Length: 270
Image 1 (cartoon, rainbow, N blue to C red):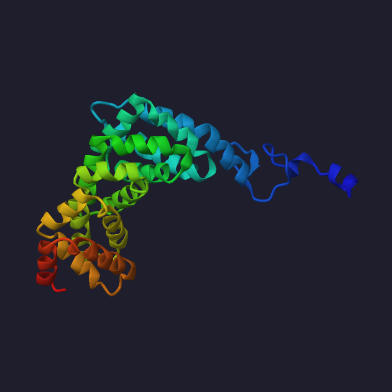
Image 2: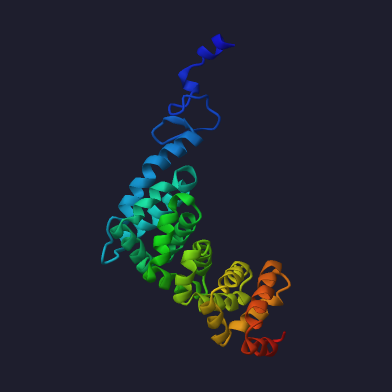
């Protein structure tokens, strides 16, 4: 058997791993590699380079050419994320690069904002980038913009809900994002979701329940004219079991200590 292995021609081995091909792919150069090997190689080399180029500086005029480059670059980075190490994202901890990140989130196209939301979701979900997630969670400009984003009745708001949900996994981020008006943003998102066939209302409701452990969040929900009403409406969504559970828990939390919340819940139909 050993003798047979030594006679295997190099043509049948991946030039990167030197193992036998299992899923060969041929690049435009004509060279063939094993798919998993070339994907890991590209992620380890191309991903850091793209991040460096994307966030090195921002064109103050936001030219169409520059915007398109950032759109394509971010799509490429996101596709490579599963194959590389998230640690390379820590270059965004540099003050200038984090500022560029925030500026693009403020002024970028819809596609750029969606991609940056997905990037925040990945950053917040990994122990390798925990410190970076904390830095993003302290940036008032970014938090203000993402709260505004979830209030828009668009697909971009769904990406914003996912990013916020990931950021809220860190307890240290919750207080700061509540201060930027997230409770009102979640209420608007939940109410807007009534007119959608598909939404992330259950995730938004779960985050609302989680944040109600903060006194300021309870006050914001009760004081919002549509706050308790939105939770009650979520309670009666038969098609959204998880969202209904979170709505029940949320109502119990706010009504336990607040007569005003109980009165609003009765008026809303409880």
